[in-house]
Image (cartoon, rainbow, N blue to C red; front, side, top):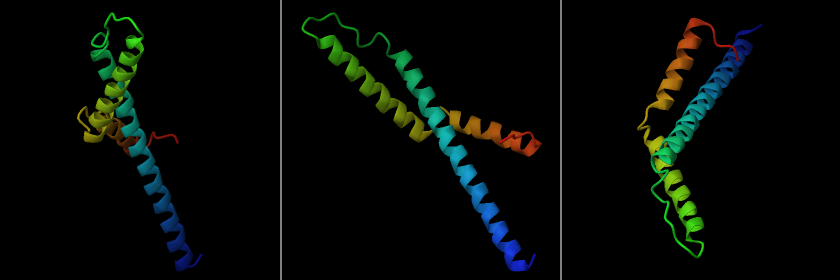
Length: 102
């Protein structure tokens, strides 16, 4: 195998590792968003319950879901909960110890 071939294989391997790292980061952020959504949903569980006639309870449910989704998205974007960092730290420790089975 010549030097150019080794360089190409090395570049491909680096690109694959970069892609894997990016996928892990995206997955960790998505986990943080799911966690934030569940947290906000639980925190606001009774906040929008109103006894009203005329179908307004359905609009309250839609409003609550919108608020929950918006807050969860912002919390995840700002990494306020730190869950993505913990997931990445866990994966990196597994990788460093050689027990990453992907």
